[in-house]
Image 1 (tube, rainbow over the protein chains, first blue to last red):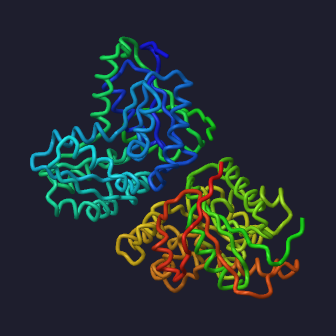
Image 2: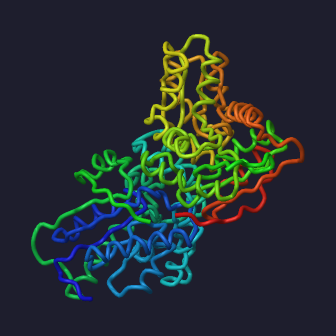
Image 3: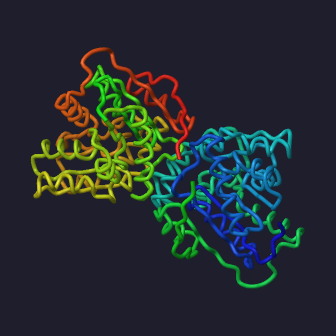
Length: 268
Length: 268
């Protein structure tokens, strides 16, 4: 099946944190239509197994293909870590996760070869970033830490907050002691804490935001395959599998984007 | 369908936090067999809507009935708040949630009629505790606060911890300013923080743990219907819908119970 360049890009996440990736896509690919699906009925994926996350990801990708999407962005680090190879094996359209773009950006940024990764438990346990980084730079040393308390703090809107700072300090301590000079924000919520994380990490540490590089790589893929939308203003449609708005107001305030009223779809 | 007294009691929760309720049931009903189902593939329910939580709860209850359970305990405050009336309308076996037992214990405990509730966002938004308390004591004043950061802190094992104490202080402040003398732990994870919460709330405030009273009420119902197991050592079987052990080690350490190797079942 070949798609017209005017077909939408499908973007999915376990919830609405992936809208930080949408913000990067809208900036770098402003003419594209984006169809976003947030699996809020089963959020979060971060503590679940590979089998379960893969099953959910296949189900959502089938739904996005039915909607005519020409490419899929897995805007969820956990699903990227656990399910992207399966999705890429099933379908031939461009399917990009967060891991490879984040790993490439980290390897390009590091000077001393010591790269820190923070993310959910499932992302860290998968060692997906470690493997992607090592395949690009076999001598790199990767130090990872799961930070499960940060997501609910972000969802509370505690973005510039002493308590959140204390949690970040606790989580970053082993990474800073290991002298990392590059830190990958391996969860789509974390860009909302980017300034606090950068301040606590200190000026020695470069912060890598996977979403930015994912958007750049996707643009190159679409152009190479003649699939890039060439004109128009683009559009964004947000659908969720459960009608809880969650921390949408926090996201809208922080990203300065209006996401509109989400449509509700039932999967599974 | 009538059940023998030797049939198991079905207990379910969105995850494994409901094992704190199992601990109370094992103490108060030591001769009973307990079949526990934790819906870890879809955990947590706390941010989801009534429709989604009810759909999951009906599905799980059907599964427990197929397993021959003579009674069902909804060991999840969110599912209790949103789905128990639907379950009680569908089936005639004893079905107990956390809300009614917690409300009864709170009304019995309060002297000044000011009762605080802490729980997930969905439990607090449902106002289920408010309604249950008001129907028992129309003049009671109920002050509720959602505390979404506490569950991941508990799951990190930060049970005796300055950062967790700071979060508890922040969440309890409006309740203490409203001069509550009774506080309901409206989430099955919170009993693991009972001593920290009691210390921060101060000696003026009585802490109500819904699980304890639920077990007492269930014992009375089983005895009244001739369904109580009269002898034997009882047993516990734990099943999960996803094979992530989550914070099981934290629970085992804190509750001093070995839960054994969970079986994995697929629902939905």
